[in-house]
Image 1 (cartoon, helix red, strand yellow):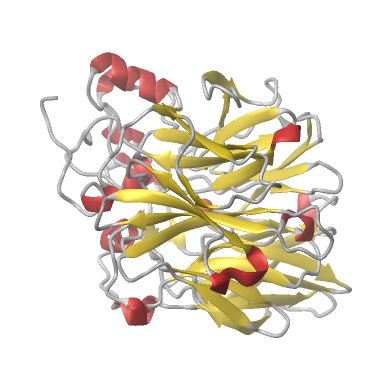
Image 2 (cartoon, rainbow, N blue to C red):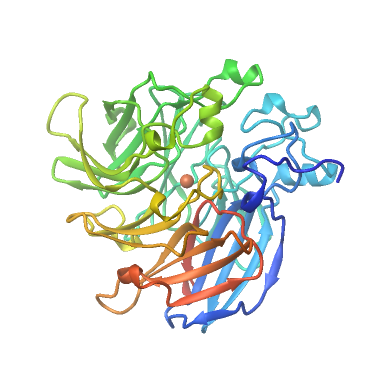
Length: 479
Ligand SMILES: [Fe+2]
């Protein structure tokens, strides 16, 4: 290779590109894997195959790599493959990177003008009998669930009009429907948002468009049994800035946050917008409707946590000013006006997830990651910089917290949840532990109800797994 990866935070240390496609059978397991773990955990990782076109870039631009941990009769096998997007193939053919700044096609090599820029590096989901690799700036790419070979772009048999599809879809596990949206649906920096529903077979049932108050990074949304919820926070884009070669995102603290709520089976003209101070959040744990009230639970910050976005804005924020809280926003649909209520449920954090059976409903327990500064100095892992070092189990009604952290020299990645067949059993959590000293990874399995007891099994991974974005557990019987 004629150029090297930069020594910046996004490309060095534990964040160094891995670029390893592999098949490793029978990973070494310490402890005992629960018998009920029969299935696969798929996870997506940005992992650039070539050094950045413009010398430096963000972690989030990396080519999509999908890992599959297959659990079978107490054995675990690991497979990793790149998502062979048009972008990946163009760069591989040229043996160098050709795409410029994060989500700015005006900075690309002229040879790839018009080539799909999607890296599909954020979330693998299983729906309608298809494994889809998603990233919010583009449409889905379908993968073979067994081999991880790329089958090609997926646009709902040509039915999807939106140019984008969120990496945070919401499945209704009772009906099998998939709720999703696309922002910048009509093109770069547009306010167009497409609200979509697919049936259990992956057939597009609905696609309706509306305009957000401004063009924002709408990373996630939430759905209850009765409502769809579209939060809009002031991380914003602008076409003129993009055409000048500027950053896709800046943080605009002078703008308000908005939350649009509509009946989930209604029309987008029924969207009602609530309004609050500038806030930042990437992910929502859960939401549910209770009479006239809609509750939305999530880790809420006061500024965008991604350094590349804050730097683009030119703002300096001390880490202690960034820490937010885990909150519930409650919207009373029976009252007029734009206001809503906030209740603090726990310490700040991200990557929240409740059990699938609780999605969209009143629920008791959720899990998320946090950084506990008392455990040691931050370790660089992932796009935000400091990686999480602690996983929390939160009882949302009482506020009771339990926590687990491996040690002061490790960070933890996003967890997945596996339900148990045993009545009253809360199931299991699995997540990657980043061993910074050894530059190796382990997959920990914990009993969800007793995370403070530590892992029941530790799966040794003989390589460093770059910090994944999101993953999903898919039972063996489903594939
Ligand atoms: Fe996300």
